[in-house]
Length: 482
Ligand code: V55
Ligand code: FE
Image (tube, rainbow, N blue to C red; front, top):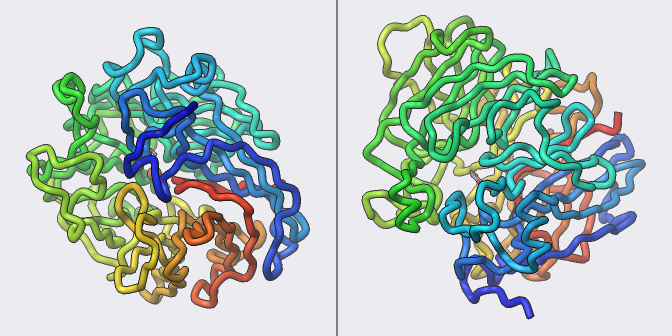
């Protein structure tokens, strides 16, 4: 008797799927290189139940993890819900108990004070556990082989905030996990905490500080010597929540801020820089040369989230949502508080930036993007993502030459975020594969594509075919079998 609303968030390409699945030995076109040995995990939001308030946004769907295990040219598929507290409480009740995205005032009173997280934003392994992440709650730990949920991860009792970013970074030199939490003293608080977690899975260093204004702190940059926090005005307030407005709204009248914390420093060592308003969310990579810091992020002129509308009531402007990879630089040795240095690295519009993670935090050459090429044909009305964007190209950027390569997926498909797989531990930067989910919109089905990362424009070298449809996902990561 379940009935989902007849709204854009729940129909067409956004219709719920709600399955769990195991498929041994997927049908493959082409050949998966036998040297690929490990698992690609990715996460997608999928609502377990119809929304409590009649409609909802994609960002509030319950997290489901897909695991593609590669061995000897064969790919096995496993797909499971993350058993968050929200999922379990609602599963027991048989209907939704939690209301709007990040608004506990809209919840059933029986769930007051419970973690509201959906674990739907990122998934990675660390210290032997698979962590499913949503930035408003602690990580949810799962078994990396069976995808069974263990429960909330408090890093051996050392996690001191009720929230944890969905974009932690692994330091390739130390093996540490560098992370942060915002709204770290409760909903809408300006308190943040920077964390260093050791390979033993325990927090070994934390620095508390405040941001200039509460906003969505979705990602950050880490270099060998600095952690960089970009404050972009995707803002909120108790007033919004009391009025039942969307949690976030975009404020074009506010400046952006860049907080730079020396990794071995304390809050007093942090410096804040300012720049004119723009939209930026994900960070491709960051690095520093002495005190000069480089921070690569796709930047759009205006808000990219139509479901978090302009706080001054200006209509959403799709023309201004095109994001282009931009290099910001700022010097910790400089005087003054402005940073203006922004160099556009490509004219292609793209988001979901990725790298060969072995070159995280250092000067790097190869970057990958989910490209949105408006000049290419699209024959599937309703196939656009919740943000109204259509990802139709896989892009490789070579920062050494400034050249790009791209591959267009055709007029009846769309693409999800890619993930780099090194050919081996000793392979040179960028020598490896790219894998990503391709939505076959006309067939209501999905494929997993595998590319040679050095020849993106030649198209996939192998396609692992799914007989079912994955929903639009967020992020994913590679874990080698070793
Ligand atoms: C994002 C996604 C989220 C979220 C906050 O920018 C930010 C992406 C899937 O949920 O809660
Ligand atoms: Fe993200």
